[in-house]
Figure: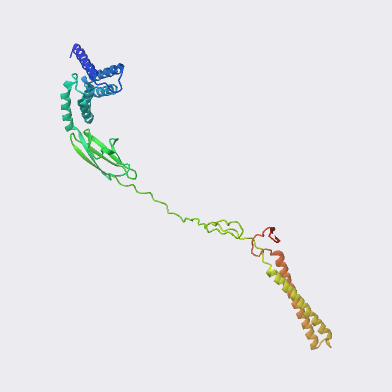
Length: 339
């Protein structure tokens, strides 16, 4: 093609584009003339790239132009570029959107081509039929090639472009399930995904638990309410008790009594010895034996009394408990002092 014919074709294409853009219905929010001019310029760039067979760049230009200014001719051109780059699902929707636009003289010639493209694409687009188990899992999320499928559309065949796809499903409390499938042009592939529950983590055995039980509170007559006792709490310390002095007192008293008895027996023996007619007779021997018995009894009494004194002095707390400090308590009618 000569440069003159290229320039003529570009001018003709620009005229058609301008007419189509001007004939397009204005959106609710009116666009400025500058926006329309920029959209037309980007559209012409896309058309030139399409003429060169650079469909990826052309598709990008048509998308940008359509984002600035929605026009039927841009929808149609975008559909052609998407079809050429393998985006069949997107191309089908672009041609359908073009056909629902109001018919205009500038785009009338493209309507028949768009209808033919829709028929061809409907037989070329593949579909995935999803079958999930359990289908009613709370928080279920399904993705196709990383794109979330709306929950309301899970029971419908999902249109996809022919080729390889990855389907994943996840839900709280379940392990993620994934499948890779290949969809041929015009095919419907059934994808079955079963979700397995996650194993519950092992729990440590519970140790004995002490539950506090409040005992009934009792109050003495005229006194304050007693504090409730808790089961499992440490027992309170017993009240101070005075060490027992019964044993040393018994030893002391018994020893003194025995001493007195021994002295009395000894005195009786001495008196009997004095009344004896001779110093070597039976009477004298009996008196000396009686005096010796008195000495023995008196000595035993002295030992018992001494033991009692020692216990009183060195064994102040027989139970081994710590001696309580002196304290005084004032009663209603008496004063008590404890040591």
